[in-house]
Amino acid sequence: MLQQLFSPSVLHTLDLIGIFVFAISGALLAVRKNFDVFGIAVLSEITALGGGLFRDLIIGAVPPAAFTDLGYFVTPLLATVLVFFLHPHVERIQSAVNVFDAAGLGLFCVVGTTKAYDYGLGLTASACLGLATAVGGGVLRDVLANEVPSLLRWDRDLYAVPAIVGAAMVALCLRFDALNPVTSTTAAVTAFVLRLLAMRYHWRAPRAWHRRSTVAEEQPPS
Image (cartoon, rainbow, N blue to C red; front, side, top):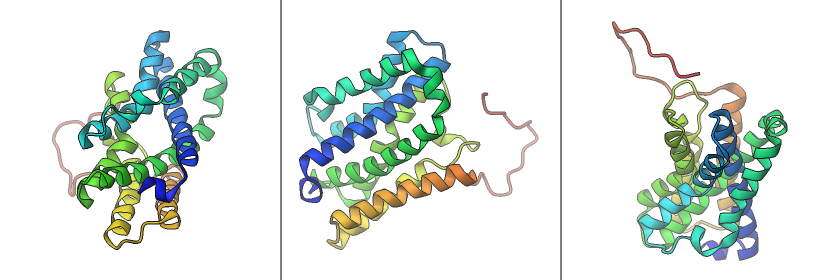
């Protein structure tokens, strides 16, 4: 299915771009946590490849693409080198990095959902794995860095929801046999735009309805 939507070279290039941007975010967090160069590389690799590895292991696509294509492994190392030497400059263009990260989110939720469906999963399970592909690396990054994963924190702009919307759109297109380059691109762009709007207007998911507690509210870590 993926090969019918995009040429292998285009798909591979988009994958590497998404991996590189996700790796940058992992490496930057490692620098903020004062990790050494090995820790920076590990967090970069995990952030970039974690979601795809999880998906491939679940659907039985073994060995995972990250272990059969050297480019998938080397790209996060390039991001590590960049951040290691130039992290003050990379921090200054954080807004641009966030835009590319949103683009990677949109791409990976579409690719993940489609690949899972190709391997025989149902529509709901495929959409869930599309979500996992898009956000799994970030969750592993935060866990390894001893932080509450961003997508679980109420004080962070919506991240998982745009990926859910993109994956659901792909699942609906598969259900009605309408998945093609135009509709898949539309799903990716929708997730991308929703993420940008969430960052621009600080959209956040609601907390518990009529939330009451006699305990002082726990403040998120700075």
